[in-house]
Image (cartoon, rainbow, N blue to C red; front, side):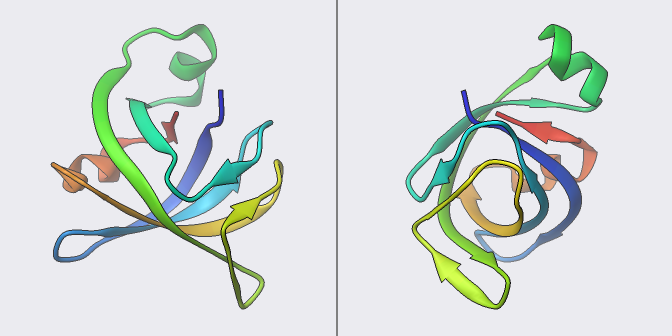
Length: 94
C-alpha cells in the first residue's frame, strides 16, 4: 500500500500542501489516504493509527506536475479532505 513520509505541511482553505518522500510504491492522483500516524515507528508496526479520508489531487516534484510519481522520490502533494489540520501532527499517511 502506498504511503508518504511527511516533512512539512501547509494547510490552506480546503486543501493542504504536504512535502515529503513517497514510500515503496508509486503514488497516483486520485489515491485516497485512509490512515495517518504520528510516528514512523507506529506506522511500521501499524499501531495507533488514526482514520482519515484525504484525496491526492496533485503531485509536484522537480518543478513539474505529475499524475503519478515513483517510489522513493521527494514531492509536494496537494491533498483535499476533511480535518486537514490533523496533518500537522502526522509523520506518515497511508
